[in-house]
Image 1 (cartoon, one colour):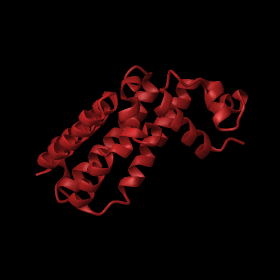
Image 2: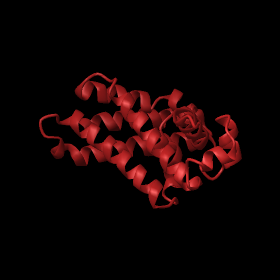
Image 3: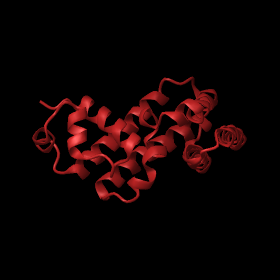
Length: 181
């Protein structure tokens, strides 16, 4: 029997660490202690598996948002944790957006649909935290915060100069907090 948590969690970690294209079915099944046949008994293809894993990873990220302090204080906590050196250094344990965005853009419709649903939920969560009385009024700002955070983390991970990378994270936090005002 396929343990969804096992395959989703382990495949999510592998995808974020090595990339979707860099993660073969045999590696994914080995990580989860399964056979290729077990995977294909539950998923039509690797694309189907990817779509399900992306959806699961974004749901997991949303669950973490639910543990934050309410309102803008929780949003600030989220941004500080998201744009931390620890998150930067551990892509396999972090955000699927920062680790997989370029690959998701090249995936098929099922994965893009799963990602779109998850990204929409994150934007809605940010908007509610910015303006609980009228989240729709904060939607543009929420999109800006989400894209700023993801892009900042991606850039910091691409830099070989640790001092510059840390500076990018610091400025990303400052810019995000300014945008929140």
